[in-house]
Every structure is written in C-alpha cells, then in structure tokens.
Image 1 (spheres, helix red, strand yellow):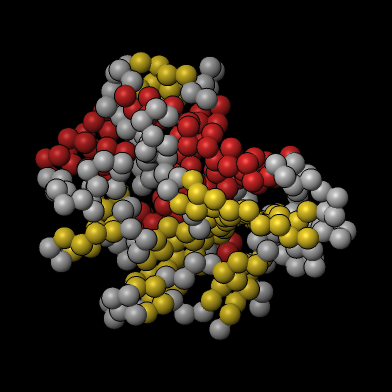
Image 2 (image 1 turned 90 degrees about the vertical axis):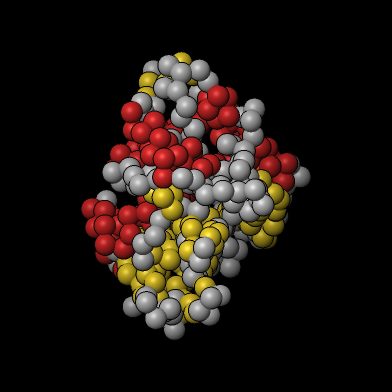
Length: 341
C-alpha cells in the first residue's frame, strides 16, 4: 500500500513558463550529489555545475574531518585551552549541532569524534582494515571522561571556539544536511527557485516541476538481507518546501564475534547503539535539522526518541525491528498529520 505525505503549507508560485528540468550531479564528502532544477527558456545555466561543486568544496574545506587541512582538522589539532576563530558557516553548523546535543541530553554530540574513531568509523583505524581492533573498555572510559570533563565552548562574539584539549569534532551527522540546504540556497540566489537537491540520500525540495507537480520522493525503505524483510507500506512525500533525512543501522556496520556494531555511536555510553531501531526519518524545513535530529532520535531508541520528538514537534518516522525479523512503524503526531487520508 502506498501512502502519501503532504506539506501543511503549499505555495502557489508556478514554475517558469516554458521551463524544462535540467539535471546536475557529482561527488563530494565521500558520496554522490544530484540536483534537478527547472530552468526557464531563456535561463543561462552554463555556470551551474561548477557553482554547485564549488559550494560543496567550500564546505569540505571548512568542516571535513577527513581532510587534515580543513578548518575542522586544524581545530582538532589545536593546542589545549586555545581559542580558535571559525569561518561563519562552520561556526553556525557547530552551534546548531551543540544545540541538538543539549536538547537530546547528549544522545548526539558533535564533539564525540574520538569515540567514533575508536570504533573504526573515522578517517583512520578503519573497521574494514585487517589490523582493526575494537576498543577496550578502558579506552572507551578514558575517551568518555575526556569528553565530559572539558567541553568545547563557543563565543558568538568573534565566532570563537575553545579547544579544551584532545576534543575531536565530527560533523558528519549534520554537515551533509547543511550541504543540501546550502545548495538549495545557492540555486535560489541564481534564480532557480524550483529544484530538488540530494546529497548522499538527504533531500530538499522547493517549488514544483514544470507540470505543476511537486517533487515526489519515497521515504527510504529499510531492508535487511539477513532476514529478507522490509517495512510494509511505502511512504511518498511531496517535497515542497521541505527536507528529509534518514539515519539507519543498516547503512554502515561491522560484525565481530557474531555481534553487529552500528556506525552510530551513543556518546553517553561510548558504544555503538544496540536498541530496537532500524531507522529514523525526520521531515523538516531545514535539512541540517533533519540530519542532526534523525541521528539523535536513533540513539535515543523508539520510546525515548518518540517522546523527545513529540516534545519538539518533530515530524518523524521510527522503524522498529521485531524479534521475528519483521518491522513495525511509529509516526509522531506531526508526521501523521501530513498523511493524505
């Protein structure tokens, strides 16, 4: 059964008369990106491909924890107790990520890169390398103690951040969503108000297609080859002035001694999540918010995650693993209200 989600607010701004869809694509942040836009008959588009790639390259230069010479890389190597001036976008993304960290009680923490690295999901000591060794309990305890004892501080005046010592920032759960927002903003500044942006599976849509239809996208389906099952009931979303992001335990993981270890780390325990959630999808006006919150809610689990999502009025869908290998689905009130029934 196919179900349809519709936005609460729908603009009546039509696509350009005689407009046609143009497609662009490339690679960044270790993944692919794509853009579909509606261009008027007289629109000049020669610069669009390079312009989009330049936006993404600028984000990597500031916020990538894979690039040692990025601004984030330099912050991670900065001396203890040093204040670092951050580029405006980097500062804003880090500020938002830390807001979600506080709101989620630490279920998401952009300062927990050292724990991500210990579990082999960072830029070095990867889990898929033959010499990888899972961290010991003592290593996890030390990393958690360092994280708790001396937090990163931000000063909005001057856009400064304090490196307390040994903190490893990791914005991978928010920067991809921010990049979607950034491409959407860039397209609007270039006169392309009707478009669909995708980076690594996270999406944002604006306006409509030439035929007046919205940008229809299917919410990511959970599949598990081990049990050959998928969540029932496809959900199709009219991505009109909205963004969507999904966090799932099936995307990246490794198996050790018969146990599956997800790439999503719970900063509170220092361990990969081991709850009942297969995935969380968040629909939001901003993709950065959808990205960060989908991670935080995944860590919290179905009960606590649903409670917090309701508290913050988030449109979220939880896909829950069952003991028999199947799945069940729970939606927040805000997402259910978007169902076209």
